[in-house]
Length: 594
Image (cartoon, rainbow, N blue to C red; front, side, top):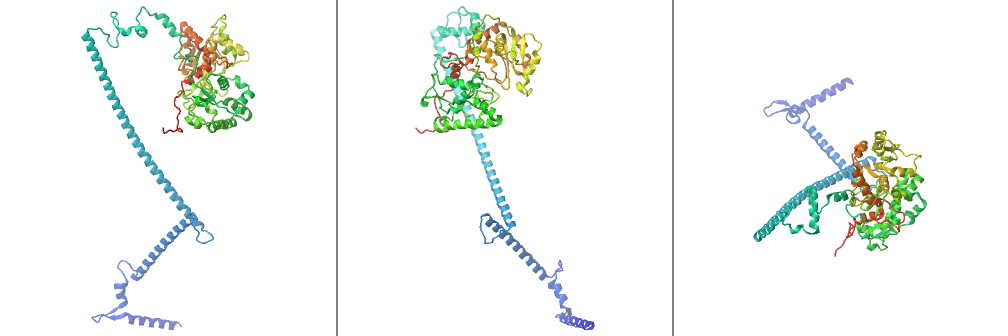
């Protein structure tokens, strides 16, 4: 067998050699296979035959095409899956679904980025245009103002020159502008009542004496005169009307009946103002003639009850919903809220929290007028000095608000130079009163004629009133917030309030000059309070006491709504409200075409 195989291989090789040997044109025998391999089948850079390389290249091209078709088909399948198309298969491939999700999520992100970029470009472009327009408006206004000022000055110069030329030609004697006339001859413009007053002011400012001007008496009058403007209407009648919404008793009357404390608390102004208003001449039953609309809701009283029942956190949530119900009634059953977005509506927030007991107040009633004792300028949103009104807190004890303590003249005053009795150290430490009261107690502990102490059972309300009445200065350092009822109590008994609260705004600042009624000391100088007060002269102390005598009733709320004093706190608050009156009722929700 082995020999046979060998002979077969030899014969095959011999045949192949015969076939491979050929003659060229010159008769030279060459190996055709070698010749072909060198000329056709091989390349100088590759050992593979050309046909083999062409075949591999075709295979690679076909493979790329198949891969492209596969990806394209997968993408189309992903689109079909994304749009919910069914190809007839009962089961979807998990990988294809994931691939479809990736594609559509990527497209979504791309769309979002394009939109955001487009909006950003638009905003930037409009901002640039607005800045450019603002610059142009400012330049235009400045140029217009300069031209008007120039024209005004030129006209005045021409008129003055003409008048002077006429008077000089007529031989008249005239007074130089903005200068006093000589004794003889006198100017006609100085004659009459107005000219007399003007001359008195000039003499006072220049320090000169005048025959018809008594500087000493006028000086004393100015020193104890606290009025800047009318504290109450000149004729005792207000020139506006108020409509009171008729809400369900659960918002007011039921609370006042079930919670007697609400009437005697310092926050009881929400009840006192409402009840006084129902018997006042400014009340109207016709909302069409009303300039203001009062919302009779006793929020502090409701919050106090709910806090007792369910705790502070839950009480605040329930109170917020309760306020929303009242507002919904006003908005749906009456047309007047939308007419001004609530700008002519009045709410009472008598507590230290102010409107924050209604958590959604910023969204819903921010434009309304708030009656609040918390005139804290540090809270820009809670209190707005241009629309809101600072009111005195309620002192319910008749001994204070009736003025009976002031009538006891026989008791010698000024047993105590400076007086404070109240909370000094709270359980939260120096967070209360910013630590001011603790520092003051330590600073004043060795001063004999100064009382600065905590409340104690040994000194009841009668003791407290008598001690305050027998003091020259009543110290009123801030507590949790700037305002304190102590300042108004001091005025009711004739004690000069010493206010130590930087951010406070006091009632009736449009009408009263509180520098004539009180002393205000910076919080950082609280420990120096006694040294500062010692520098005030006795005459200045008397002037402040006289000024307080003229206006103390304006911080006292009378209890009988049918017999209020003309200068009762109710009348003064209404007078302040009248300053907020607007002749036109309009808002973002009112429109007209005629």
